[in-house]
Amino acid sequence: MIKGVRKGMTLVEVMIAVTILATAMLSIASFMGKFARIAAVSDVKNTANELASQRLEEIKNAPRYTAIDTLYPGTVVLATPYVGYTRTTQVTHTGGGSSDLYDYKTITVTVSNPRLGTPIKRTTMIAAF
Image 1: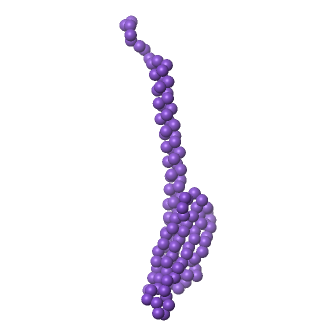
Image 2 (image 1 turned 60 degrees about the horizontal axis):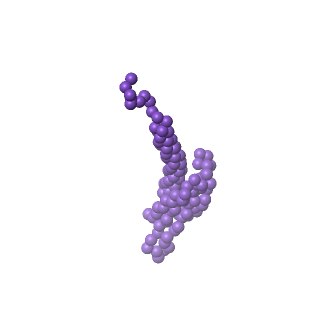
Image 3 (image 1 turned 30 degrees about the horizontal axis):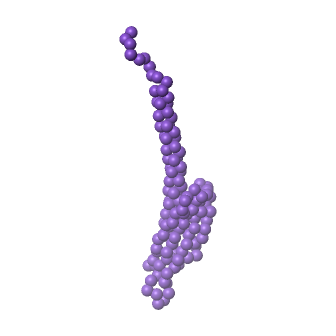
C-alpha cells in the first residue's frame, strides 16, 4: 500500500458535511412553512375578491335603479362554503333631485375574514339612465 493515500473521510469532514446538510434542510423547512402560510392567505384573498365582484355584478344587474338603495345595503355573515367571511354593502346616492345635474349611486362592497390582514374593498358607480 502507498503511504499517504487515505480511504474515507475524517470525523471533522463528516461533521462539517452534516452541519451544512442540516442547515440546508432547516432553511428549506422554514421556506416551506412560509410558503404554505402565503398560499393560504392568497386563497382567502382570492375568495374575498370573488365575493366582492359577485356582489357588484348582482347590483349592476338590478332590475330597477330606484330599488338599489333599499334592497342591497347591509352586512351579511356568509354561510357554507364561505364560513368566516362577512360582506358589507354600502350605497351612497348622489344627486337625483329635480334640479340636480347628476344622479348616480356609489356602491362599495367590503369583504372581511379573520385570516385577512385588511378587508377587501371594491367600489363601482351606477348612473341613472
